[in-house]
Length: 258
Image 1 (cartoon, rainbow, N blue to C red):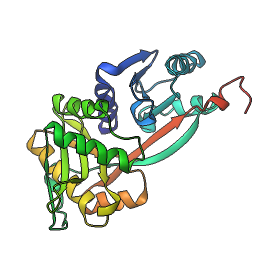
Image 2 (cartoon, rainbow, N blue to C red; image 1 turned 60 degrees about the vertical axis):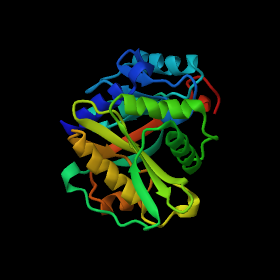
Image 3 (cartoon, rainbow, N blue to C red; image 1 turned 90 degrees about the vertical axis):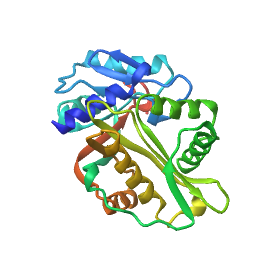
Image 4 (cartoon, rainbow, N blue to C red; image 1 turned 135 degrees about the vertical axis):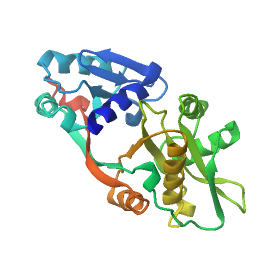
């Protein structure tokens, strides 16, 4: 049930960027071609046809985006085989972690850093800058800030870690707008100058507690590497499944030379 709830959340999170291509809901960002903002979620228990996969690929190519999916294989167990046959290749398999909000563990943080929720544009600009720098994205733009405003408008939360000596934001994270009590903790980021000070764990713990206070009953996240997994484990997150990111590079499309 939880894994299907994650899919329902991901479809909901697509919001006004959602597009349906056969048995897939696709999130497109017309301003940003970065993979994390352009992906498909399959219908549950999907038995895809070749035509279904072709329609999915065409929808991405029409928008000059790389065809890709982010989904829980357990919810659509027949899909991966069909995608591999069409030339898709896994980008990564990531642990799906959860933490009951009331079971979050307090995380010690450098006393020179203050962690709290933010809503104002000046802080959101700094949060966007920290996130983009941490994930090697271009300089923050108005679109990045508008995306964070959208998180808040949908009932999500944005957190910032502030260096009390300079007043600058040095860490950040967010919870997406919840769907049926389910939401994702994402975008946990720390400036290189302030790493190894407990900031990522403190931001994650704060968001998890604040999510519970906002009525969110199930929080999940998908760490990108083992180091991040260890940070989240220290504040109470544990593995309950797996998320697959899989895409079709142009060179691997059917009929295209490798």
